[in-house]
Image 1: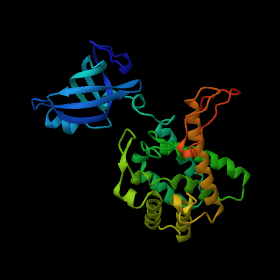
Image 2: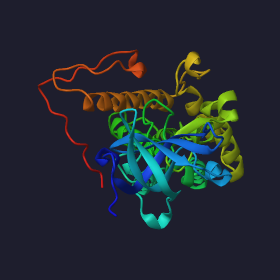
Image 3: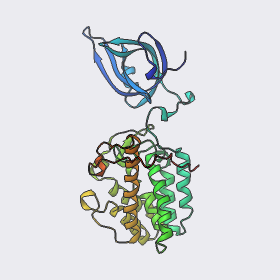
Image 4: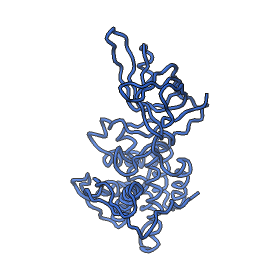
Length: 326
């Protein structure tokens, strides 16, 4: 049986394929038989599915935001297609499932982006800055490979945090060619570390979907978590205290305003640049995403991240494909 995407489902067909569980509830029929009521999806759409006579093990195993292999029959219920599940199992590594078929992902492979970031670390000449940055990257690589940069806002896609860091580094490098007095060691390290603690602020699995904020994330937030991480790491590697303090200041001030989480405004030029590079990168991401969903000569939906502005897509240019870095 060939794998079938959801947009190919037709009533009466038996289908088989890999799908992501987007929502699931255990319910009970009128005669007290339990069943799982699921919403499953792939990149082509989503559909309601039922796993009748489910067991305790089924309820524990088939949870939200996992990929499963399903065989079943498409039926019609109240004028809507529905999938009656006959067989179901978790997707395995040997299945070779491409996660990009199920969730939005960054446009580059995580390993490539991680290596690009490491190439900027190699340009850092100060041994204390380099040691702190290298160790934090190394110890948190497994999370960085999948984590988004936010739950709902900019770069909220699988591996979005790596993508955000990588493009910020590219922008920072160009800016430092103009403002040559900038200490690029501080700038590169600040860019790499500014949002690093989001991996502790949010709960996200291998699919890069944030399910919730952690307790510490809600009580402290990634800025405070980030300066704590730098302080611990600096002590671990025996780094210079001023280096540690400067890096902490960059993270502490990068949101610029107290109401956005920064109790101090930037007091060194590298911190000032970090804030604006972060703003440029996040806003360009949101604008590009809005333009992709807008027809030429039209306005986008309101963007919360841009004070509810609507973005106009002019007729005088065509959106270009993102230039490949590989």
